[in-house]
Length: 288
Image 1 (spheres, helix red, strand yellow):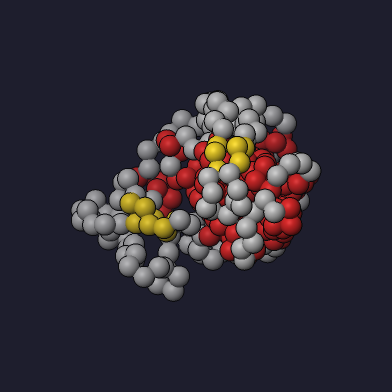
Image 2 (spheres, rainbow, N blue to C red; image 1 turned 120 degrees about the vertical axis):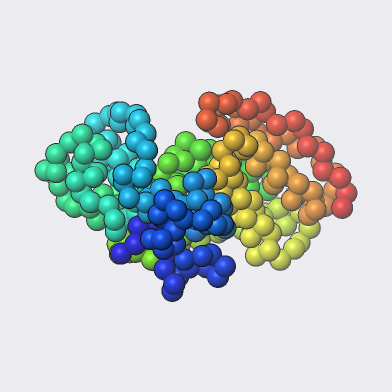
């Protein structure tokens, strides 16, 4: 098994060089080496990803002490270790050492490594399902309902960014022996919710009739892009307010008449690494 972040000849994208032991040596050439990430090729700052170098080559970094109950610390520790090393390369010993508990504590709460993995994935998806259900209850125009669902979900991404990073690493990373989990259930529920709001907008005359799959996919793409910015470019401080503006731009093209829409304030919900965003300004939708 290979650690997460490495690739073999069979699953390496075309154009990404094979990483050999010679390249990891002290005399390796400073060639263009890339990490295989879910959103494309990104140059590695050190030339090689840390988790494929010998541990002696990786400078020790101070790690913050985990807080909470033993169960909560185990989940935090598993998120950290699974994300940095991958499911297959992670041992129970590494998880319990990071959580500062003993192996019997992990076995009591989760039975084994597979159990804690499934708990992590299941808990995150359950939180997304709950947040989507809240958004579906929102009343108003199609734009307001779609915006509510997307910004609610993106708020959760920002709140749980470490677990989302783990989720992406597992789903898009190289094949591993991780237990099977049906990841596609939630995306189907999300698309159904967005499609329902759009159909309401078509029926009320708020929106021009366009292929529902195309508009739904456009909305889904905006949420995915916002998530990937949060994962790979946190310095941009992309917020739920920014996502709301993107969705409004999309709706400009399918609005049937000029309207002035005030997106709901996300001030109380957005947590963008310490920054609090002001409510978005009024958006004037012109005739298209």
